[in-house]
Structures are given as structure tokens and as C-alpha cells.
Length: 223
Image (cartoon, rainbow, N blue to C red; front, side):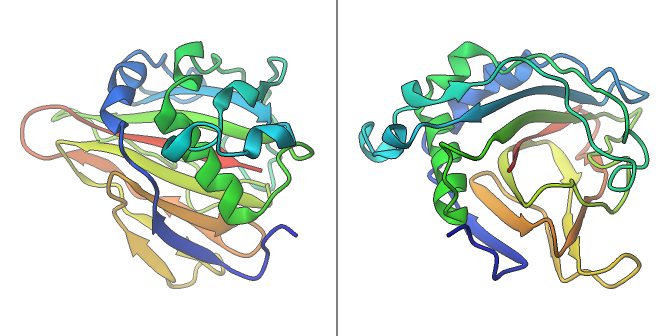
């Protein structure tokens, strides 16, 4: 049965191969649905046939060849969970095909599926690949909509890289206007899972550490 008896959980995920992701994040296109030039993003959604959940790739996780990328579709949230972009049919570029064949990507997806105990052959899940940029001229806002829920059952925020930044603290709340029950600047190789039905989340602005530009790279997976 899918996991439901929790609010949040922090853990590490197998992070060998994170460096291989840098070129793919470098090529992310701008998110056209927000003002400014601080967020870059891709999005795809998948099913994973049950046979694909076997660990056929050794320590690197299940064989990503079994992932079924679903047809391109827009991403839609209701205005009740996203007052900034809710109700807008947002279309993002698909994840690059090369990403799907990297062992680190298989590790990330398997970590998500294993933690929640979901049947990925029946439940669609979405993968957002996001880079937040900052410089001496501007900070980057990972959550311009403020404290929010995503409108799903499960959310996993996987930190891939923090480069020359401060801030980007992820905070979780049981209620709007309440005190955070979790606050942490996620480090590369860390993931926080949240029960999107019971907790709200937010990540505060990304600011440069010094005069040079910086960025924060994450995968956000929802189901």
C-alpha cells in the first residue's frame, strides 16, 4: 500500500553520478510563465511498468529502459493550490532523452517509488527538472507562489547541486501562518519527501555567495 502515515521524511539518495547532470541543467530553457530570468525548467510524466522495477541495472537502480514516457501534455494546477499560476495550462520542454539513460536518474526515480511504495505501473508521476539562478543583480525565487501545496499526494524534492549560493532553505508547515516543522538548506544528495495532503512547503530565495552568479539544481517528483 502507498505510504500515508507521515508528514515528511529527510534522507540521502544514491548520489554517485551527480556531476553527469550538470550539462543537462546547463541546457535548461527558461520558464516562460514567471517574470524575470531566474528559473529554468523541463517537465515530463511517466509510468514505469512493473517489470521495470526490478533492479536490473545493479546498484544504479531499476532499468530506466522500462520507463514509459507519456505523451507530451501541459502541466495544470488549480488556483486553490497555486494562486500565482493556477488555472494556467503551462507547457514545458520535455526532459532530454539522454537524461533518462543516466544511472543517477534511475536512482532518483527508484528512490521516490521505493519510499512511497507506489505502483508506478498504475500511477502517473511527473518529474520537474529545475534550476534557480541568482547573481549580484538579482536573487532567485524557487517558490514565487509562497507557502503552498502542489495538489498531489506525494512530493519529493531532490537536491542535485548548490553552486555559489546561500539561502534556498526548504520549510514545511502543517498550516498556513504557522511555525515551520522543518527547515533545512538541502544539500546535494539529500531528498525531502512530503505528504502533500498534510503539509505545505516553501523554499526561500537563492542568493549568491559573493560577486559571482550561482544556482540551485533540483528534481521535484510528484505523484
